[in-house]
Length: 264
Image (cartoon, rainbow, N blue to C red; front, top):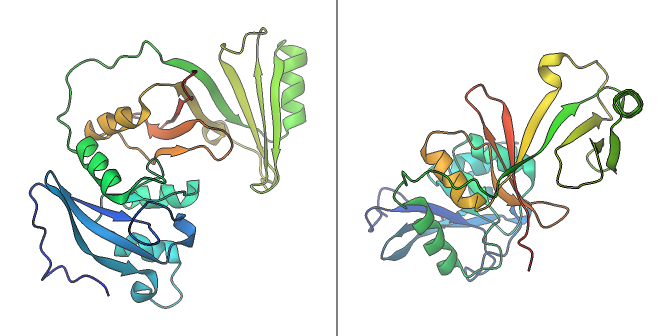
């Protein structure tokens, strides 16, 4: 049964309203795309108070897209915890003011809620960011003909192809190019979208720059508190073990933040 906000007032102050995708309420164990109902909690320093269950079927209007339904029915929630989520729904939720995260996948719901509350209510720090472990990784450009661009950057500018991939599911190809043999140097990422027909203009061909960081979740919380847009909160990379997030600079340019696994 859906909650009724007029009769279920939060009992904890201050509190953070969080939605959870869980099969039985014990762990964060459901994929966003497979979840039909969400558990909602008001979380405070003393613990979590259940607010209710919200089912997509109960809130759907006509032939509304389920993602639009979720954005509307969870509009009062600041955070959504799931075991896995794709890029597109995560960005759509972020646009509605809901931070969807898979960073607590598999954890007990009570533990995850306590960790989220502690992180989101931490007092902002005036200490300068420790960027000693940060480095520029790559810049991404969209191109109209990948082979033509590879020829230009390799034959005419002397770069070497470090890696090339074709993504059949998402209909695009990408290649990373750089100078020298060291994997530590900055690279150029070229992306060719298979279904693109019209040529790119200089203003829409730029994709993003990427920065390798540490402590990505805390960093994004700090940036968000400073008013920096975070259209894609930290999430596990679909292929590999990196954690990635996207932020925007004052001019709206996207910056990809990448946290690689710690070397044992």
